[in-house]
Amino acid sequence: MRYLVLTFLLFTSASWAGCNNIACYGVGKDVLTRTYLSSTGNIYIGAPVGKENLKCDLFEGQYMTLKMNHLLYREIYSTILTGIAAQKQLQIRIVENSPECEVSYVTMNP
Image (spheres, rainbow, N blue to C red):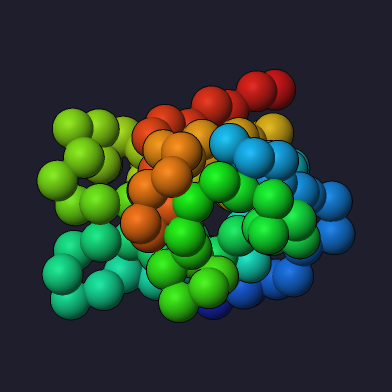
């Protein structure tokens, strides 16, 4: 049952979220539209409304990329999942002009 709820949260469309030139933000599940893990170990995070404002090239035109070799890979992914489950305000910061909108860091606020 937990996996069903988590899957629902991850695939629900955004109702209050957006992106500026350097980050995407929103409350919990609203900050991302979809997420998936690839066989390379990278995690692809669907960007919400306004993704065209980001100063980077989204993977497949819609995904920010958390690279497996990121120093804080596990911590960032854990923060994203915690923010979704707890409905906290999230901001996902990207590396400007990166080829796959590489995730730089994540912040979570009450």
